[in-house]
Amino acid sequence: MTEHSLWRFSRALHRAINERQLKDLTNLIDDNVEWAVYGPIDMFPFLGARRGKPAVMEVCKQVADNVRVHRFERESVLLGLDSGASIMRFSLTALDSNRPISLRLAQFAQFRAGILTSMRVVIDTFDLVEQALGHPLHLPRIA
Amino acid sequence: MTEHSLWRFSRALHRAINERQLKDLTNLIDDNVEWAVYGPIDMFPFLGARRGKPAVMEVCKQVADNVRVHRFERESVLLGLDSGASIMRFSLTALDSNRPISLRLAQFAQFRAGILTSMRVVIDTFDLVEQALGHPLHLPRIA
Image (cartoon, rainbow over all chains, first blue to last red; front, side, top):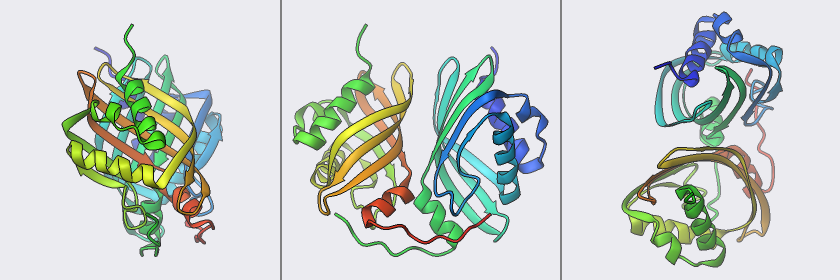
């Protein structure tokens, strides 16, 4: 049984971010890949939408410049033939501030012949912002 | 071909929220359902974790008291035999303020014999908070 494309891609992405070994990742990304990580791009310029392999490789390098991944846990996983989705919880360090950050996100990946053609990521961004700032933001109660 | 459990559940949830018709939803939720919608519960008390059918029905009523859904779009969908995940974009009105809110979230649902046993939802919460407040929050640039 062949390894699912999502696991191979996740390992390559992890290596790119933590070890700056980009070769495996480059080989697993389609030239016309669509990439969207929703979040406040004013604070985190490496979030947002990208199109095409060069733009996605560049943004992965920016992520590598900003975070180190210590641990991750898959809380939910759903695998299709050429696609995979998971909810993940990451333990990171923000390299500029040396702050520990615990990040929850959902990723949806689409592959063609093992190569990533689309990635969409939804992040619990308010929690991320508070941790990156290092203090809670005051919020009124709505309900 | 039978309709996927996710579609039946989504329709019942939509009816519960917009029309306060709770019966279909009640019949599709397991007595011991696990439910987690990650987000700032100080601002939105109907977010957070719940366990068991009565708690989940109660929280769905609270959502119905606070929002009206106008439109939704599924941006990504992945269906398993007894599970389903999707990235969705909702157009809502926050009923207390009458503010329009555009919300992106990822949901992961697990079913047993068509009945919901687990739901996890990751929301782009910073975007939600800014819209609910009605103004942007100033953020420093991190990277």
